[in-house]
Image (cartoon, rainbow, N blue to C red; front, side, top):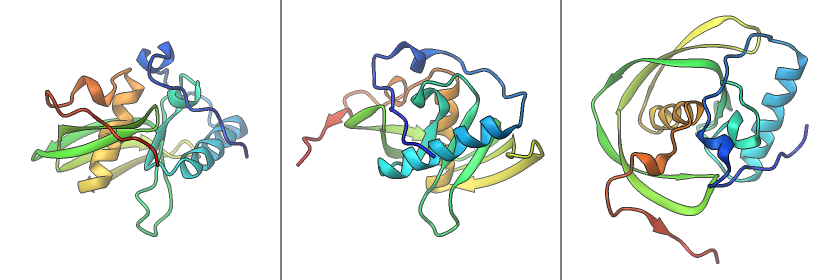
Length: 157
């Protein structure tokens, strides 16, 4: 496993649409392991493959609920319910936060590391993370959907 460099705001790869994963092999497992390690090292809740320079539809999420990280490959949000204002940040935008409208609940289909189709129902923080990371796969950044005037920069201590 290795810590990978997180691409920062302004890197053009963050604006590209990721390609579907077709091979579920050891190289994919290595990427996922690296992404999880990179996310944890940077105290993140989620990470998309674009953020480490790979144009593949892979996201990892850990909301630190004791269940461990979730890996979603080729995820597609199939249903949303409700809407609420949430504050978000992004590892590609260090120390910046904004308020967005996100669904309260989502359902998504995805593939696991073995290439088996799965479904997930999520609410609150997990739903928010799935939406945020799935947006990354389409080149959409949280600042694209922020409520006007809500972007804040926090100075690191």
